[in-house]
Length: 354
Image (cartoon, rainbow, N blue to C red; front, side, top):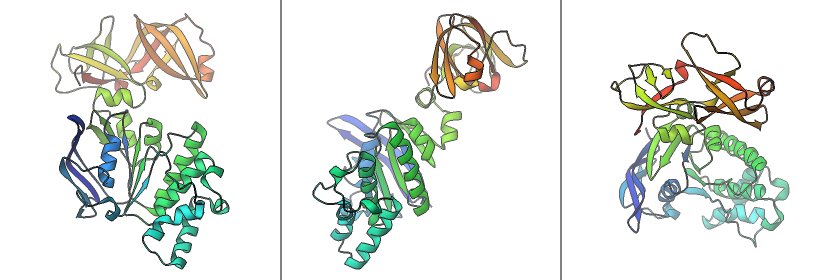
């Protein structure tokens, strides 16, 4: 049975549609990410779950209760904001205890709960410090502890790591996932960071222009995108335009690509073939592998990315990128002629208008 369920939820601001016909349900204990570019409606959807915005239409149900018009303070949710929203005149312990105090928890129980969550976020030794004495990562841990202290039915996080530097973001997102898993608390996480969403989520909801583009696991979203938007927004995908020549071939301007079989695309239809950079082998000699596509190009750029590097190759005027290990890329030089090889199974075919 679905624990959180949004059914045909829509919201507009001054005739500008922010969220349109949003329908989603998932089970208790899951971490679900709303992922998409700025203005796609992900934060508005989160705020409707929280009760800070009222939907123009549709319903929101939490644990079998219709909460569509229930005030925020009666929804029993925990919210973590991008800006932390800590009380500057209260120390860490007082900030964490605030929600418990508002709910009139007995002092002994309040102290016990505060100690538990401070231990959970590893801030016991900083409990007497004030927000200005903490790093950004520590402040966000306090905000998380405060949200968890009241033992909410659902935890909502609105771009919680976007104000932090890269190294802290990586460490803190792992901590959030650890805590979420330990507590088995249902969590909705809003982010525009693809890596962040893919690395911690049970379910990823990709949004665009107020609507859901695709819902699935990180692996499904990356390996089986259902639209060009998802394919290009999640990671990088090379795009080769052409026309379908059968059920497993595409005629491009300068070459024919063999693809895995596709359905419901008629002969001569304008299509695009999507190929991930990591699926492409770069060779100095033309490949003879059966079932592989081999196209020529000229090396234009080499960009270092740590263990891997990204090669930019000019293929008949189109820039194609391929990922290679350091060992393999050292033998290549700029302006060198190379052959790009990739199997038919690495090609995903979509109609041009998808």
